[in-house]
Image (cartoon, rainbow, N blue to C red; front, side, top):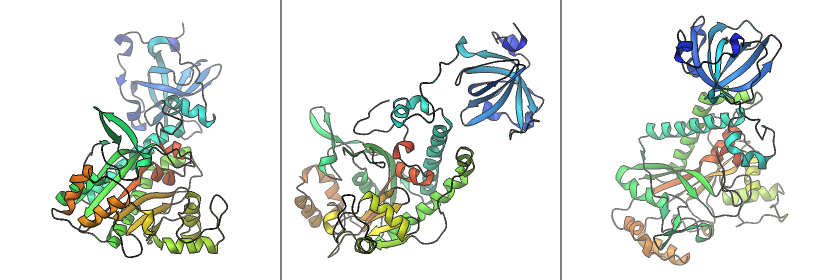
Length: 443
């Protein structure tokens, strides 16, 4: 048995080697003997020397083995070696010259049943293995970074984070999209939105937000719909409609800029041709629903079914993307002043429209919906009657209009949709760890 294949069977073999996490090994440690753990991500074996990329977390290190050594991808290794300066032509500043190693549990990893370019269904079925590919590892890091950046903004603006319940007995976006739950014999639902609960908190703290799962029982198979998604929601008191949109715009500009500050170099390691979205301070375009329809008619842009648009129509996903591309030249834009019948009971109304907005973004369309909330008790009751909703389960929500109401508004952001536009993903599944769709509930 040659030196390089000697297993590290006891601590005596490891003596003289400094235990260290792979991510903490650096060029400053050249000349040091280290012991670390990682997984094989690449293997190139030659007659007299072999090269492997060893990965742990988001860090990768080059390891040089004496002789022809072959390991399958994702084989787990404990390695003892010396940190040396890399004199090769690649970009690595240092490498590990391996003295000895041990295969964890003594077993090579079997060959993966998928590759990074496998078909979509196979990648989803084996999503627990696909996350080991560089593209999915980047997704994990990008998702985590975006959550941190969003919370950074809210902390900076002194919002209070809360965690509302996800099992509820109320609806926010229509009964047809509710998932029913038998809650000890009572019919309950998985939440469509935490908005109503945030509205109870806002009068106490001024500004409140949550980052929670929401559920929509929609049989939609588009590239931007999920049945379970991460919902970033906020409610603010003592605000008007323009102030609400100003706040949304401020959030989006901050988040976009900070996200790329943190992630752009890492993104370009995986996607060298990546072009980041505009994070300049130029104002977002604000267009009424009527103006948007007029623009679609003028451009002869039709509905997905081939029909021409007319005033009062809903604007489709594809048409939203067209508006972003053609009207705002790829930058986010607000769609405002929707027809009254387009929005639910809690939205504050004017004589001819509602104080509501959607934020549209490149490649996705709508990523955020916001509105001023109705604060008049009688008008809320009228809204329940209009939508044929029993007001009794909403007694606690109606109390808000009795006990010290105020002008207030809020919004809900689809986190995965935002990640889609920032990462230029072509499908929302890529912005989700294990997507939940009408035809998928595994892994």
